[in-house]
Amino acid sequence: MCLDVLRALASERDAASAVLERLAHEIGDLPGSADAARFIAKSLSSADGEKDARAAVGSLAQLAAVAALRESAPAVAEAFARTRLRDCHGSIFGSGDIASEEAERVIERALARA
Image (cartoon, rainbow, N blue to C red; front, top):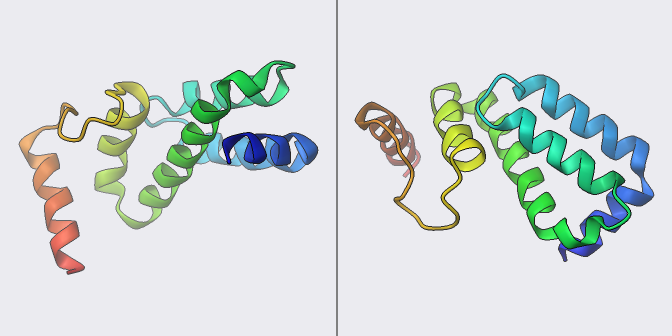
């Protein structure tokens, strides 16, 4: 699936670049966002970008999530970007370095919707 996404983005290079530039502009000040955007752009423009397809598409999904959080839950967006983009610990849940106050905000937000 990631190769399909990467190929679709490559076939619509101008649109993909515009979306990526907009995401980078909107959230570029959050931890790890600028580096993630550069990595995705490099993967899209690289002749051998397919080797990084999973990581690039995963980073794109995380950038979109950070942008959505900045709109809906700004207090959570910084912690999400820091733990998912800058200080990536892989997919091990609970391994992110977050302060107690940040954890409380995330839990309060989740419980408010329940």
